[in-house]
Length: 178
View 1 (cartoon, rainbow, N blue to C red):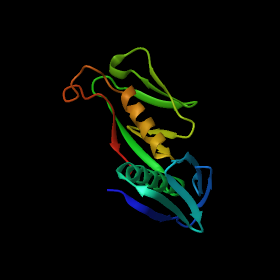
View 2 (view 1 turned 45 degrees about the vertical axis):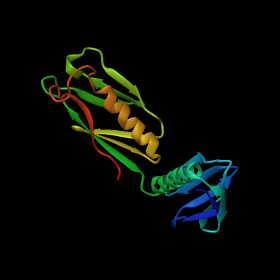
View 3 (view 1 turned 90 degrees about the vertical axis):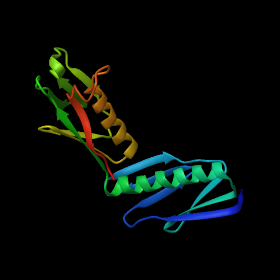
């Protein structure tokens, strides 16, 4: 069933400035600035004072899902420029003590399961990665970049073809943003 002339608005929180130009939404806050192209031909976005309004001529199931995703992206942008997103990973090593270090935008895992050659990962420049003992912290303003980096770090410290219940060495995500 299609709904005609559907309207929805979301309020911009205090301390955030928003600009919209040809579908490109720019959000600025105390932790930085994020840009995202949110253009959709059937959904019209407009800035009205301290609100972002959305209007759809005929809201079908497809437009409703696109609208919901767009609103979620915008809310994640608001959270990113005010609080940021933090992932925590734990380094678990059994017999071979592995060392993880970050230097010049590159993460290196040395002595992973006794390997002689270190495993390397080039980091995104928008992400801050710190290693404190057995905990790796990934911080970023964009939730997608933070999650992608945490997933890549977990992948660098994993062994394919082995049962994780038996071989429990590696790097694992222990905390995600809520």
